[in-house]
Amino acid sequence: MKETELRTVANLNIESISSSTVVDFSRILGGGNNRLFKAVTENCKEFLVKEYFPDDRKRLQREYGALEFLNKSGFDDVPTPYFADETQNYAIYSFEKGRIADAKAFTSIEIDKVVCFLNKLQKTKPENENRARFLDALFASRSLDEYSDTILFKFGKFEESLKSKEIHPKVTKLAETYQLSEIVRGTIERLHKNSATKKLFKPIKESDMRLSPVDFGPHNIIMRNNDEPCFIDFEYFGWDDPVKIVANFLLHEGSKDIPREQKLYFLNRFKEQSSLPLHVIERIDIAVQLAALDWISILLWGIAPDRVASKKFLDADLNIENYLDKQIHKIVIRIDDLQKKSIEDQ
Image 1 (cartoon, rainbow, N blue to C red):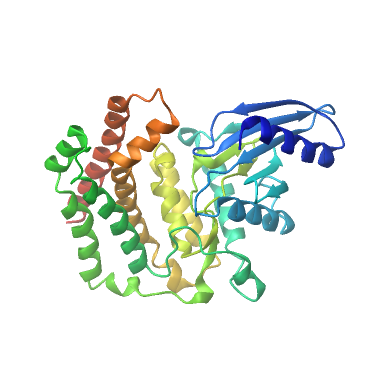
Image 2: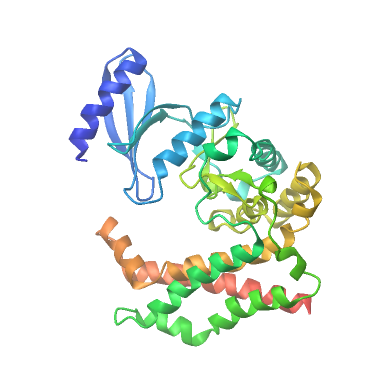
């Protein structure tokens, strides 16, 4: 939809919601593949208008449904949903004032609030109407075996890209320098064969599944002006293996600057306070190891020619050389961290 068309239809709905005329409607930064706009009314109310990227991931349905449910369930640390139009693929939410959480400045206070949010969310079980109400999360899994398959799928996409004529020499050099298949496939295989861990790869019960925002880290937390967190971005929301979200928070690219002691505090606090069954919680440490491989695979897939081309399409000014240098640097750091931990465990 053209921006002028979106402005027209969104303004009509905002004016109906606020009983006031929209006096400003402007594009704001962020949103990834989506387009974000801030609308301000004559009576000084502010709204976020979000136009979703048109793909098969049902982003609007997931996010709007999640926020509707959470608001009705007493969560005051998420945006308020006001209106959704699935035909036009946009929604209207509260505009949350504040700043993106600073991972480097995370203290035990912020960590406690993150743990509280997760534990409250995970108290919703897939029973009765709750199960049918929500889709499975994007890349959901019911076992660490399935999680491994998802990681290998992403890594496989990168391996396929190495055969492309469009592959960048810097990516080829990375693949030649590191034994990437041994790092990803080899580590997963060893975890499966280890007598102490292989039993943890078995499927969990349907009743052990929990709701997950999936893309969960400091980059998706707005610290409101009262220093309380507001959790955003529920486009991948749905049912998932509950230990994955814990592991993903720790290993997420957006979490890399959280101090190590705070990451350990997060892990211990979650285990202490979680309402999850013990047979689910005991799988967290393996999930963390898999999440490290998952993020290596995500970053590798991100430098495949088609993914780089899509980045260039979204940002015509993108310097591909600089972009690849930054992404490869991230990958190398993660590989070095993984290999260092492997040596320490020997």
